Each structure stands twice: as structure tokens, then as C-alpha cells.
Length: 121
Image (cartoon, rainbow, N blue to C red; front, side, top):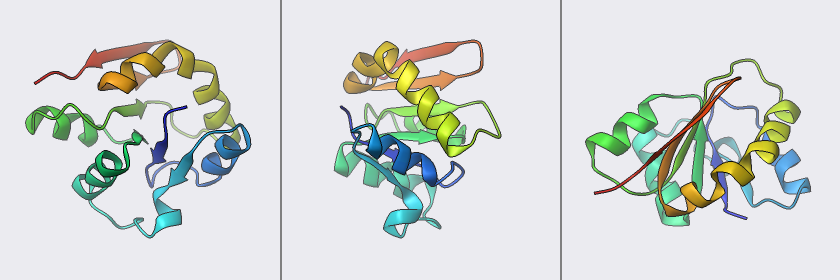
């Protein structure tokens, strides 16, 4: 399982639900990064080889502008999910995106669609 880093806008409880399912999941609030910039969060995710999961569109933009292949970023475009709902959704969709995020990808998840864009330099 690919390690993941959950951004500040996501429920902190999601990390605990994912850990119970056997994932290596960390929320930025658990590691003192709740006020970190998007660039700092991306740098940490890259260093730790984690996929960043966020609500924030800026993460995809930063990857493109800086021509980076890692870390992969999964942007959730569904607001208001509880920690449990988000964890269940990630568990459900992960088999469809796991290979792409392992190689470097920007993934956008909506209620009806999953869009994957591979990162290449």
C-alpha cells in the first residue's frame, strides 16, 4: 500500500480509519504541519514518498508549474465528507488509481468520475 498524506482540509479522523484498514496514513495536523504551505506539504510528501490527498486545486497547479513527477496528488472534489465516508471512498477507488499514483499522477475524484493525468517531465 502506498503511504498517504492527508491535507488540512480533510477530516483528521480519515487517517485513523485508513490505518485501521492497514494503510500508512498521516494527516498534516498529526505531524505539526497544519499551518504549512502547499509547497512545504508537497516537499514533505515527496521526501516521505507519500501520495498527497487534498481538496485544494493548488496542489495540481504547483506540480505542473514546477514540472514535478512526484509526489502524486489525489484531489477530492466532494465537499462535506466525514472521515469515515472519505476513508471508505478511498478504499473503494484505490485499486483503480494505485498504479498511476505509484508512477506519478494527478488524480481528480468527483462523485461521478475519476480523472487521472500522468506526470511526466
